[in-house]
Amino acid sequence: MRKAVKFIVALLVGASLFYFVVKETGVEVIWDGIMLLLSPQGAAVIAVTLLIVFVGAFRWKEVIASQGEKVPLFPSLRYLVKGFTVDFLTPFSLFGGEMVRIFLMEKHVGFKRSATATVIDKIMDVSTHFLFLVVGISLFIIYGSGLSGIFLYYTSAVIIILFLVLFVFYQRALKKKSMLKWVVGVLGLSKKYFSDNENGRAVMEIEGDVMKFFSSRKKDLVRGMSLSLLRHLLFAFRIFLILYFLTGQVEPGFALVVYGLTILSMLLPIPAALGGLEAIVALGFGALGFGFATGAAYAITVRSADLLICGLGIALFARLSFTSFFGQLSAFRRSFFAREN
Image (cartoon, rainbow, N blue to C red; front, side, top):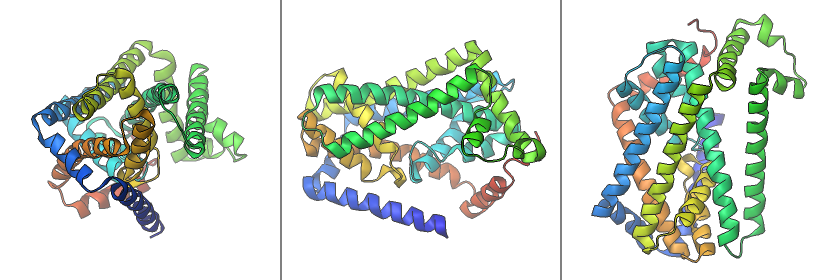
């Protein structure tokens, strides 16, 4: 019940932000964004969006292969789309669908390998997100004008927190030491859970495999990070296309700025970044000289493209009973760390 209340509150906050943006720009910006996606130019945006999903599924498949398991691309693609759907509809658009992916992939490779591969895949994704966030915001400070203090404080806090988390993780991985035990130690909690408890031992085994990937499997890591870089370059290229179609300008630097702002909005605790994407990007477009309304139109276009993938995920979920699926998922979550491989 408490989770439902939090979800509703977050959704209402997002809806309020969305209403504010639409009120400032006019309802026509919604139609501008949708009509762009439905135009011949929109076909290119949709094609790049599908390619982004394909590269993401292929990266996940390759990570699973590094764990000694072979999984066909199509199931990986199907499960990734379902995971993205949950990601998109829950607070913090960058997180949320991993449990779904672990649950679905478990029947192919077992729980521990499924969890290990999914965690590795997410860490590489977040690492590349951080890279493009820093590049985009740095360029925004150079290109933009009249940046608000609140925006700079929020952006700085996000970058610092992400940097510290990733720095500690990679430092611990290179030393082949546990990050979880370090976190528990910092918080002053007992480490006995990881040695005296079956679930704790399973957690440590999964973390050990994750750390081994980032410290010892350099070839697999380079392949995975290369695919991650390609995927995010495709994200930036999609933004470049939308900017060109909306403004007629060809400026790759602006595309990186907008991508950085888009990533920033995804970290807001709002389902589908509703309102947050429109507000942050619209303010960014204003600072870049494109105009508030153009930023809102961009946000609607990107959201519509992602909703197509989300709709595909819902269609895939519809093959099963939603009640049955999420009932099984809840049971899986409760016994998450108690399963044997």
